[in-house]
Amino acid sequence: MSNASLAAHTPDAALSNPDIAPVPVDRRSWNSLNFFSLWVGMAVCIPTYMIAASLIQGGMSWAQAMLTVLLGNCIVLIPMLFSGHAGARYGIPFPVFARASFGITGSNIPALLRAIVACGWFGIQTWIGGAAIYTIALIIAPQLADAPTMLPAFIGVSLVQFVCFMIFWGINIYLIWRGVEAIKVLETVAAPFLLLCGLGLLLWAYLSADGFGPMLSTPSQFADSAEFWAFFFPALTAMVGYWATLSLNISDFTRYAVSQRAQIKGQVLGLPLSMTLFAFIGVAVTSTTLVIFGEAIWDPVLLVRRFDSPLIICFAMLAVVIATLSTNVAANVVGPANDFSNLWPAKINFKRGGYITGVIGIVMMPWKLLADPSGYIFTWLIGYSALLGPIVAILLVDYFVLRRCQLDITDLYRYHGRYSYRSGTNPMAVAALLLGVIPNVPGFLVQIKILQAEHWPLAVELYHYAWFLGFSVAGISYYVLMVQQHTASWSKAHEVSA
Image (cartoon, rainbow, N blue to C red; front, top):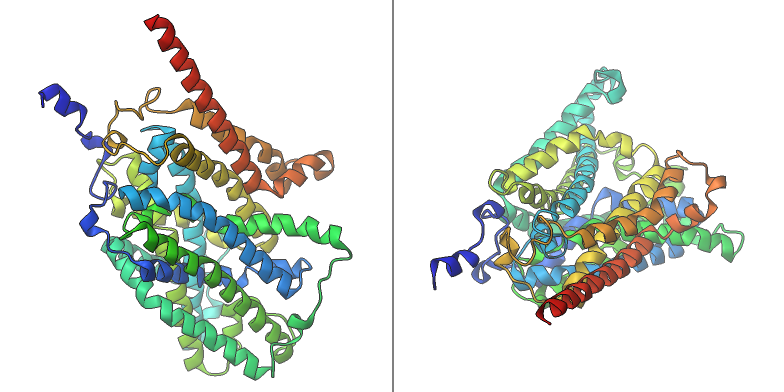
């Protein structure tokens, strides 16, 4: 092979590092059990426990809420499996996969959008883990409850709460420093422990209240079917949005799969069942709190504080810490770490990308994101699902429909290969992304009260279907634009040759 030909098939060093290079086949060791454990570790967390709260408070019966959770996770499982195909086949992470459709440098657009969402989730989960540590601290030293407010005052938390938050933050940073293999070990070890803790909590609730309490016998509060459907569809969108992040970057994990079958089987068994089971535990246990304490306590951290035994409280909070840690490092660190690494591979590796995630997670002040439950569901979950749905549609249409699962691995790491497009960015992908996002912008602005709902009734209605609408519009737009571009290029080449 000549020097010129060799150069044409050599990856550019500036576009790769050991963390985002293709994983060799001999290093792909994740089996079905590992993927099942991954989903148990990610699904068993406080937000999942509380996820049905907003549905029941909105008027659903427990059965309707569980069906909504199950259906939402079955729906999001479909793009999850398809998106994971490229990782398992080629050993590449999400931002490199995105280079095929968005371009070598254009891939930073979806990568950074996904990374910022993950930073928000990282902060939320870190705050929850810190709250568990704070509970343990109060048992040891109750006077800490009177600690002064953190300065400046707009931060809105006590100094001790913030210290506990930073302690848990430091544990996460340590695992980032240890790398992906440490995360795999954590998920595998944590999964059976977390399942046993959840089932133990369910058994305690059943025995303490001689049943699961009144909530499971309370019917739907909707006046008619029209009122139910008006609530159901935005709720379903929120359930899909809950894991819209992972449906985008699941290839960050499937790149380590021993086979396609391993990642498919592990995810099918792990995601819908874990989410629905733990959401049910949250509903059932909360229902019994009405009998035991006379009020519905949805937050398990607040519930555990009602126990009399300090030993039980400490053990329960340890379980919360492990559950939150296993979710955080897998769902909210691996993805953005690779995304930031893709931005500048020569300088930012996986660990540095993880550190950047951690810093942004603090700056976003996650305790404010959790302050309003309705804002959490309708602003945070649905809002980012409207952003990420179009991206995953573009990736899947490009990979499965246009390329028939065929990628040139070398060119994915070259500035001047087939994925360079125009100056490194595919304008068709950017246009399709904008077309997918735009229909949901007015509804989002209504949600955050910049626009008035009465003036934008159609926008409000469309926003209820944000993920589905964005996914459909972006996917169709991308296909049409790429086909038209290909046709135009072929016609021009044909004219020149003639």
